[in-house]
Structure formats: structure tokens, C-alpha cells
Length: 129
Image (cartoon, rainbow, N blue to C red; front, side, top):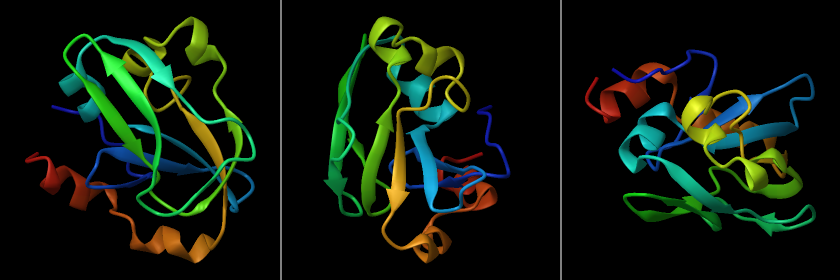
């Protein structure tokens, strides 16, 4: 059974969005379910600060033992930071997907777009839990 925190928002592509103190900047990563399906993460290609993405645009790739997958931006915005810790230790995504394994911080173009993402119960149903 996957860990699906109630306070996050999710996409059908298995990314999550975490809001912090500033509601216009969010952390984005892959869900516990996604990292479990991928297996051991060995490499990530993430964007640099200043890169701008629309909703559903590919913002990077994640390479694991089992597969290479594209990462999709759940919401439009501009990258303010990529998680540098993942360069040295990409397996943080496996060990702590919702904590130290986050991938990018995104300044939202339209914060109200968060309302269009899945809540925890809808995501759980999407993955069959």
C-alpha cells in the first residue's frame, strides 16, 4: 500500500504538489507509488531556475533501474529551485519522496489552478487503493 499524504495534491501522472508557507511557490516530486513502480532511481535530469513550463509540459526525466520516464509539470509556472541533493543522491526519491526527495520548486502562474489537481482520496482511487 502506497503512502498518500492527505495534505498534498496529485496528478494522474503520479506527481505531487506540496504547498509551503508561500502559497504561490510549491514543491513538486513523484509519489511514493511512482517511485515504487520505477524501482531504484539512479539519475534525474531537472531544469535550472528560471525555466518556465505550462501545465503537462515535460520538465525533466527520471531514470531508474526498470525504466526511464518523463516528468510532467502538474501546473504552469517558473522554476525557482531544483533539488541539488538529488544530483549526488538520486535515491532520495526512493527513500523520502515527499520530504528530501522533492524535485523542483515552482512559482505558480495561477495559484487557483491547484484546485484542478487530485486530492488524496481521488489519487488513491486512481491507483487502485
